Structures are given as C-alpha cells and as structure tokens.
Length: 414
Image 1 (cartoon, rainbow, N blue to C red):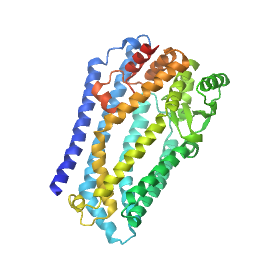
Image 2: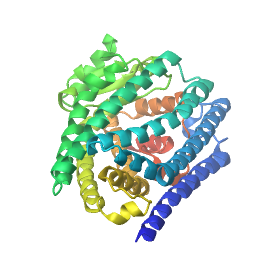
Image 3: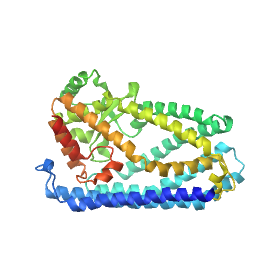
Image 4: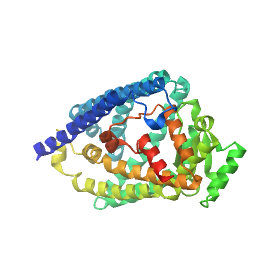
C-alpha cells in the first residue's frame, strides 16, 4: 500500500509540474506567433511599441512564475522527504502538548515557504514591476506590509489550527463536523471583518470624493435599489500604478472599491461602466454563491481528511515513525493540493460565467456597451495585458474571459 500511495503522489506531483509547464509553453508559443498582431478591436488604441511592451511584460512574468514554481516544488519535495521525518521526530521528543506541537510544526513550514518566497517578491516588486513603470512602493512600505501580513496570518492561521486540533483531540469521532462548523463561521466572520478591520491596516479607504461622479454613482445604484455609501476609493497608487476595482465584504460591510489609479486614468463614463460591472456581481449574488460552494467543498474535504488522517500507511509511505495527527493533516493537504490543481478549470469556468453575467448587467445599467468596451481597452493598455493568450491556457487558468472575447461579447449584446 505504501508503494501505491507513493506512486500516486508522484504521479500527481509530476503531472502538475509537466502540465503547468506545457500550458506556459503553449501560452508563450501563441504569443510568439501572434504577438506582433494588433487585434482589430485595439486598432487606434495601442501602437506597435505598446504591443511589444505588452508582449515583453508577459514574457518576463511567465519566466519569473516558472522559476518561482520550480523553487516551490523543490522546497516541497525537500520538506516531504528530508525535513518532515526529522521535524516530527524532534517535536515528539520535546513532549509538548499536541496543539503546541502542531503550531510549531506548521509555523516552521510556513516560515520556510515565506522566506523562500521573499526573493521572488522583491524581484517582482522592485525589478520587474519598476522596469515596466508600475511599482511605486518604497522599501519601507514593502517591509511594513510584510510584517503586518506575517503577524495577521500567524494570528488567524494559528487560531484556526489550534481550534482544529482541539476538535480532533477532544471530539475524535465527530471532529470533522465541528471543524466544518467552525471553519464556516470563521470564514464568514473574516469576510465581514476584512473590509473594515484588516484592509484599513494597509490602505486608506474613503468615500468617492468627486461630487459629480458621486451623484452619477448614486443614480446608478438607485436603479438596482442599492445605496451609494458602499462605494470607496483606495490609495493603491502608493504601491503600484496598476488599475482595478473589486467587490468585497458581506452584509453591512459589503462595498465596491475603486483604485485611485483607476479614478485618475478613466473617464467618468468608463468608471461608471466598471462600477456597473461590480454592481452586477453584487446583484447576481456571486459572492454568496462562491461562499456556498466553499462551505460545501470544505465539508467534503474535512470528511475525507477524517477518513484517512489516522491511516498508518499514510505516514509510513513517507518514512514517519511517529504519527502525530498534524503530520497527517499536512500529508493529506499535499495530496489534495496536487489533485485540486487539476480541478482548476471547473472553478475558472464558473468565474468566467460570472464575469459575463456582470458584463451583461453593466451594459443594461449603463444603456450601452461602449463605455465598458472603452474601459476594458484602457485597462488592457494600462496593465499591459496579454492580448493573445492560448485557448487552453485560458480554459485552465483564466477567471475572466480574454479581453478580446469580452469586448466582442459586449458588442453583440449592444
């Protein structure tokens, strides 16, 4: 059985590496073949120099992603086959409470992954993003963000892990159910608190300042029975020149957030179209649907984990003499992570459908698709988006339809 489990892991792990590489190469190859072609819908919007910059930006990001993925894979294998038996043995020898052992165990693994990712983040932020004129962040702000992120993640993940371990120890027959209940409540609470507690630790959020724009937003929101108090602008320009807008929060904390860079670079009509798109997500209850899916999926994952986490072959496959349940949780997570990678297209397809629904509502609210089309063109130009992604890459990864497809879809609806 140990041999079967090991072979299964290696098939999933190596399959993920190979398939990821194939997709990246297909995407790059497609860019090489069509990277000099300005799509008809972008004629007059971008020139050859801008298109070349878009292509180079995609190349550079792809190369960095490949190297980062390779580093993560090597570290994962090193942890699994070299560090794991030693770390588990050392912790068992300390005779600490099992919950404390688990916190130290996952703390060490998180620290290794976090430290290994810092060089890539630094290169991306201070070399690649600056090269293309995006990054505006200072070293001081970057370091402050890092410290805040580490502290918040440690507190939240430590709290969740301690709760899970307590359920396993004191409710061994039904821990999966109580862990699911706790996880669900914790995620809902986090979604509710994030916009008003966590996000403001990093950025300044304030209501839209432009009074004329605010009046138009109020009128737009009134069409669907929503109040304009949930529209905020955020000072993201202190970190990057990238433009964006997003929906966050639930209940009374739900809000639509517009980057200050978006407000500065787009016309009022384009901003309203982008805002209408976000309202579409709101009215179509996409966040609620995602939450429900996550709740159902987490129940299945926790029950599956409950069934196999105490299975002896799971531990002996990777040379573990001691079998603490936290090590089992880690091993199960590795299998699920590798298997989950191949399920990515399902989630991506659902998200692309949500984006089309939001685009349709944006067109209906504004009355015409032209402002949204102009906004998408400007967003593509400003963010140096890839205009020629490979269809298979899109199918597997993209949470949004490709820009040209979105624009053509909007034109047909108008």
